[in-house]
Image (cartoon, rainbow, N blue to C red; front, side):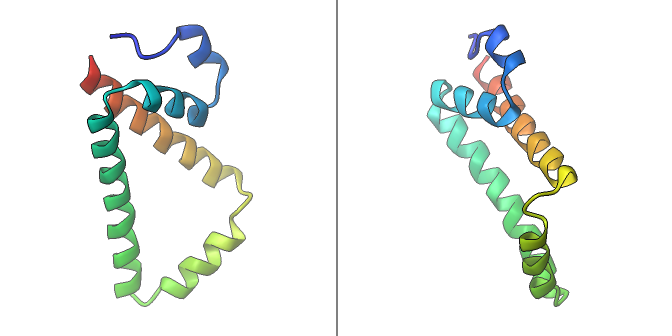
Length: 90
């Protein structure tokens, strides 16, 4: 199953590619993978709260709205999600 055109994939951002794949892939797999990613976020937030770092975390989020390293990490997460979805749909 080819979920995307190779030319479109190469010319679009990881975010655009993810949403393109997410629209055409098996929705049960898309939902399951998104839930896994949100669970990871919830665990990370809980760990920060347990260490008393939630206020620092929130301040950093606001301060890193425009940050190349954070943007690269977000792209990596989109790529990770795409990989998980595509491999399960093949």
